[in-house]
Length: 316
Image 1 (cartoon, helix red, strand yellow):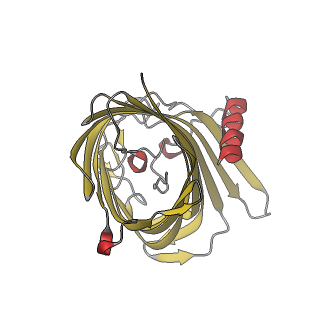
Image 2 (image 1 turned 180 degrees about the vertical axis):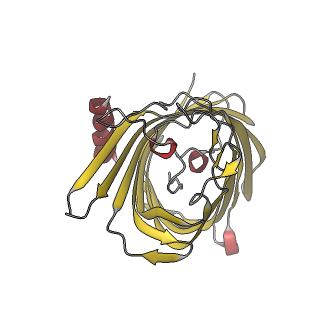
Image 3 (image 1 turned 120 degrees about the horizontal axis):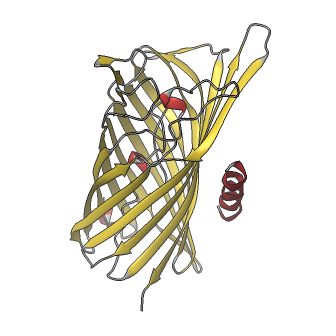
């Protein structure tokens, strides 16, 4: 499994869709990877992306504390396949491979490293194009998150890892969202306004041993930004900048809110899309934290980087 993970990671770094999710919600960052795209009838889209999330900021409510206790890295490889059922309807499936790694430091500066990798949860989405013409576009989508990810990962001595360090969530969730784009912003033909949002309603997990009543908090993500298309000979460049807001409710176990879970995050997300050839698109982006207001004390994202490549093909 680890060999497969690093082969996929190397492929993405070689060939080079921004997502947003912070610690510590467990499993694949699916809500920020809804991946809505306007597509034609009988058109296929394949997207392979890599997401690296480094968490080293220790936040108590909204205060950044000195952190000499632990850090965490979450790496995800995501494969999205979309098919245009018609010019209005698109069916999308999203699969994931997740590697979680946490390093804990002790008084003598030695460290204890816990690392697990495995398949994360999957997502099935049905998308509908409400509006699609030269001035604006509105897409809506919804679907289930399917709990196929591993939830029984253990450390080297056989102790079951907590839910937020498992590749899967162990629960059936409902995810819905929309994407709106306003083209020709300020009467500029290549300038666009981008607005999107997604919501995940979390079901109760029944797969964590000894913690069968665990439930991750519901999650809401919204982003607002602008993008500008530039043509450089035969290559299309689209830089973009957006602000991302994310909020999650506290996790719940046995009917009680779990301390130090849930909160609000605001990120700045710069990105760049490159189309070097018809049908091929390369995306790179990253999250820079601007504001955190969390419940209790939590480890949070220091920075996040994502890179992906997509390919479109029309069925004959």
